[in-house]
Length: 158
Ligand code: CMP
Image (cartoon, rainbow, N blue to C red; front, side, top):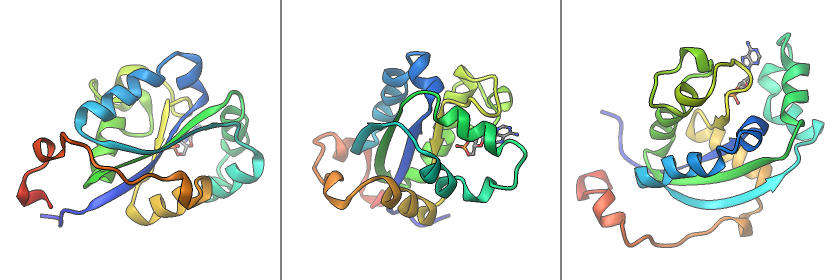
């Protein structure tokens, strides 16, 4: 069994999430799971940010189309934390292609596309910390207690 630990994930609610009015629904799913929002902002992505964020996709045939899509409307950036949050969030979001994602996941419920797949979520602790630093300054991230936490986690989780 993998060790338990507090983790942070960078979430990007993509232009299709805003255009389709899904922002509240997406936050609802993370909040009701017991995850904590520790950073939040709305921005318009620029080429330089996208070329950095999607550097591992730069040779893919869909790269230019992906950049155009990600600049087509503002995005919401959120940093979400919790014990074992990276894996838990990936399950809530679902796999890349919406048409292959299980019903009940965000992509399974709301996406039919490989590109317009509503949400980005970090895929590892290392990637998350890199991605968070790309978009958030340290003083834009918040540390606070949630009174529900003793009911979300048990001692064995910490
Ligand atoms: P994301 O999980 O944010 O990571 C990379 C993004 O590239 C992915 O979501 C999709 O938006 C996009 N993407 C991945 N595969 C394809 C594809 N085959 N065609 C178009 N876009 C893709």
